[in-house]
Length: 603
Image (cartoon, rainbow, N blue to C red):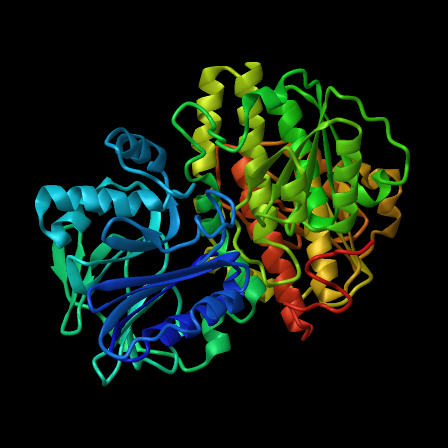
């Protein structure tokens, strides 16, 4: 996830910006840049890759008097990780940095192009600086031009802008993406997208709220919210950098579970229109002559692919198969050119999955990668890429990567359904409405988390867990079992609910814990009868459901929805939290479980 820093003061601005960006490296990035305005002159530097490359470019640059500066680490969403696409982005007399996604950038860019504006990048961000300068020509007032620009943007953003028309100011705006400003006894002002760059420099900080905008100068901090002027609310800044990186959470995994609402919103932005799914990164001709989709992945990504198979066949009405990459690459598979080959990987470097992609390319198949890291090996090799926009995931056990993968697959199933006319327009628009509700469905409720914390103490011992579910909840059961195995080191298996009587029920006794996924709107009665069979054999039952189940020993109640897909996403959060809390009670290292690596780049 991108990082922002800003500074107004008399110290060496370059060093402060670079130091701040270093503190944001943990968020992940593929390029970085700074812009400094000093003595009415801009100095700007950009580099791809690690910050050491930017440091090398700036080694001979310094400021010795008052300056304003902004910096950015970029995690690519629109456009490849190149220097042209790196922030800050330039107008004639202004520079901007931006976190988030401008949903209506294509429309704004089209209008600006028609007026003769030249664009140098593929990003959504560049429209901000050009729109600002267009408005500045019309208003001749920098703040009014900035305010007008912000009102014309749709989407999520944290923005810093500097301009020669106001040499001692940094303009800011925040909506849906975090940003704060800090102060100290020397009268300096520091901006950042999280606490860590400000620790050691500032004593007090103001956390901006959604729809805050304004400007900061050496003498004042001016904040407006929806045209109402407001006073900053300063609080003391933490001094613990690791704690600040975790934003107050105990573990990165916990933070990432809570982040799922915002990253799914990023995944949806610009892609879910009123009547259809928009994937600018896909050419509809990619699907010409395609009669089958083959999905190939490992681990958590394999479970996302299994979930996708239900959606593709149900929504897109296209034959779909799912393969474990480590098996597929050695079994002499039959691959025909009417098959679209789709690989899924958080890192884009998973060795087994990458090899299957190479096999598909050799066989002449059309290929797509669902991935979180632009410019990764798979992204460079595949014909097309859909980025999940999950941001960096520091916890080894994947959470938000899985959530965004499933979200992308739901969108892709509807995109193909539109091409194939396999859903009515009314049904398609209903699905689009449900997609927009995912960020709310995955928002962690304090009451649910507290209940799971209390329940977890009952599930620390025994001879194993069954996670069971039917239909698309079977892949979720597999993922729930994997999460528990990864971080608690307890034995767990995911099963289709209907398979219990075909052997596994022989294990049922009070020390066998069954985590039963019981959605109201998908095969509830059938799933319930399978759980009753386990209960009759004295298995300990924990039901995850919006409905009360009298045979359950414990229950985690989810909210009532109109669709099983929203139930899926909330139950996903529940099984993630359950695994987390069991692991915490066992005293394990949640973020770095034994024997595991984040990116599996060997067989």
